[in-house]
Length: 109
Length: 113
Image (tube, rainbow over the protein chains, first blue to last red):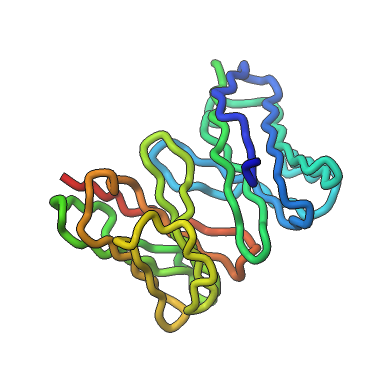
């Protein structure tokens, strides 16, 4: 089992709809969880971090964490064409961060 | 303050030559990571530094790859006897410590002819 798994996509979502991105991880003791966005040809940039079970909202973005199910998700409300990018899930293992392969999101105008 | 910087931004080299890639992390960040990203692919972990020591070198693809970090700051990734399959973007990231938010540099785009 891969340490951090994401569906590679592409995930196509109509503009204005909710985009839902999912990630599962294998290490039960992981405590730190991150979502990064990477535009084509650019470096990854942090969108959100989450450390506790439940939801964390920041503008149009909501991160959801369920440690019992080893599952973290990112919801993007009112999707915009500018949200089209690859979204990387990252989780700590021991003292370092492990990245998933990313999900390509395409917002349809 | 300044973000993570990397140099050079682009590097074209001939097969068999050695290259050095440099990373300047954010001041005060103790953790430093090197990744490789081929076109359209995910991040491939190479090596992680905590201070000047590298507790995890498991991602280095071969013994042609090495990295060092001095003074708990600047890091250099060296690729000896480059091969065409080494062509990729090499990204560096730093964080306050290992499990915190990583801040990425702009990357070095390496092309081996």
